[in-house]
Amino acid sequence: MKRYLLKLLTIIALFVLNIALLVWCVPIDNNSYLTAYNRKMDLLCSCPQPRIIFMGGSNLAFGLDSHMIQDSLHCNVVNMGLHGGIGIRFLIDDCQQQIKPGDIVMLQFEYGNFFSGGNGEPETMPQLMMVTGWKNLNSLNTRQIINVIIGLPRLAASNAKRLFKYCISGSFDTLDDHAVFQYVASGFNEIGDEVSHWHLPPQGIETSSTSTSTTINQDFMKWLDQAIKQYENRGASVILLPPVCPKSHFACCYHSNIEHALDSIGLHYIVPPQNMTIDDRYKYNGGYHVNRDGVTINTNRIINLLKSNDIISNN
Image 1 (cartoon, rainbow, N blue to C red):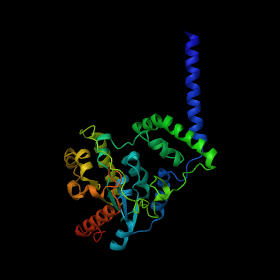
Image 2: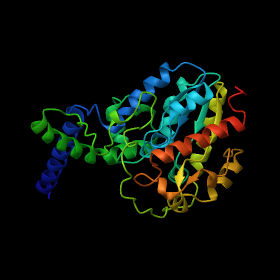
Image 3: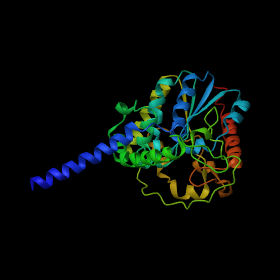
């Protein structure tokens, strides 16, 4: 029995060692999609006021033309939207210290956060930690840390593939291929918009799946309430705006419980969520992603909302 346990512990130790070596010893992919997070944070730190800061997931990355907003409203724009798998908690917590009096913060995050708790996903969190140098590990909550740990084997497997590709291409970075769409950092422009898909035809439309839960995560609601108050205490104006969402996806990812939960803590969307839906013909590759025409429609819609509600003039 002891010999069996010793062999088992040896196998586990070797498994953990291999994961550790692949996670911490393989250089990062400087062109990976999540590496764009570092560039977005640099922009947030350096962008002068007046400014509008959009915070959310890939609905913002794929759905916004920030130059249109800047030209129309004469206000600098920072698009922090990147990936729903990061979770809105990490993004808002990490950006808090960079918020200044007079900032307009547009919270436009995906509906799944209300059900999952906004703690990110195991597929994404360890990759984000790796590309950001693990500097925020101590600030993660328990659920986020668990997601990082669960995702480490997958990250190690991904790094093993990159190590193999390095032997062929001589580079650890994802190489650009402008003929097809890739999730890469080079797909973003200088103010945080994903623009590489603008010139490409829509990809195959993914089948939307029904949300696994319609139960609001109450811990998330308490956190959201406190997070918004902290931003307001720093002198920012915080606006809740529903994400742009193709109608077919909206039918399965949105639930009226969301607005009831917001009402219970004194928060509300600036417009009904149905007003931010968009026809499926503007869908790019599933979920919350829209094509170039959808980007223009969504951006004009946001500009008109900001103007009609006097959000710019009031600041």
